[in-house]
Length: 145
Image 1 (cartoon, one colour):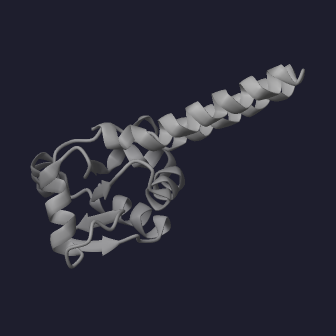
Image 2 (spheres, rainbow, N blue to C red; image 1 turned 90 degrees about the vertical axis):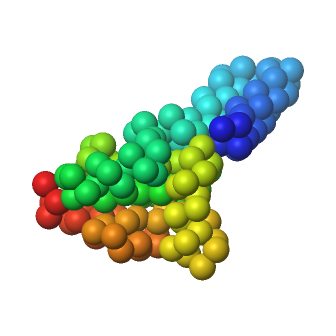
């Protein structure tokens, strides 16, 4: 759980340090703008930017019932963030599994990727797809509803 917060915390700390240095140099307006930018980066790279994660076992159970894809992801992954942003509101229709907080999810990703924890790994109808195009994932949502 704490691994997911290392990068966002680093962004927030770096932004705060930079902002403090700019305030000392009499640039408070630039300091505020820089600090807000780093806080935005921290938020985008945190688990807060993603819909609530569930466990791999629960995600598989739900997917078998409703046919929706399962996305295995981790915080700080730029490809996961890209997928999340490009899915937009449709992201809530996908079952999200954070592999850093769910050992079963990490194991399933390793099994699908020759032992590597490559994310995002999207599972549709039992087939794993590594870093698929977000348009393709959105198309899978339309066919599963």
